Image 1 (cartoon, one colour):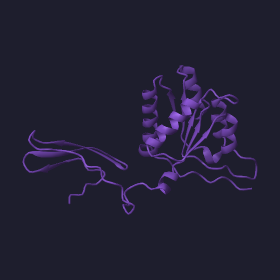
Image 2 (tube, helix red, strand yellow; image 1 turned 90 degrees about the vertical axis):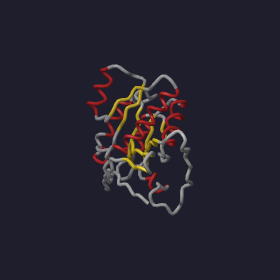
Image 3 (cartoon, helix red, strand yellow; image 1 turned 30 degrees about the vertical axis):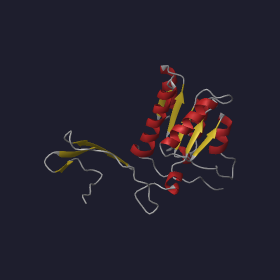
Image 4 (spheres, helix red, strand yellow; image 1 turned 180 degrees about the vertical axis):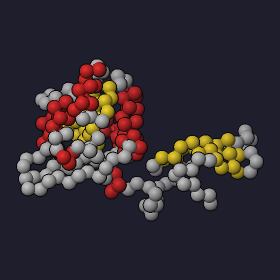
Length: 208
């Protein structure tokens, strides 16, 4: 058996005619390409996950990356949750207003929030409190300062981008008009912030 490390940058040769190229190695995902003569049959077999396999993510690992989605449009909310689940992010809390978001993230004095998310996807146009005010409010809490916030909105003007970044957003993403493009955008966000981006362990909330 040939074992490759995560930082491996090489190819594997099987005999004189077959080469397996390592195209990319990411967390829990490896992409390979196979070069073989036309007379050599190449196919892929799906391997069923094993409960004993320590390399595969389990439910407890997924729970360590909870996502808060702040979105009042039910169609957009459903699409976002589905796209996150497709990228193995199943621990999603959905709220539909700014008040709900702040209620979860900024509890009353002497109490703790329901959770401290590892990622917040925030719409700007909410029915009560604007997304920019939600963003400013959560950035005032010391335990939320390092939580990544991605503004996900239909707005695409430069002023909105500047305001959100100045208020503490980590990224500004304009919602794609098409269903497939929107899903792909959420997939890229999920992959980057959960796998590529270094997210610190959430700070504990202060106790009174």
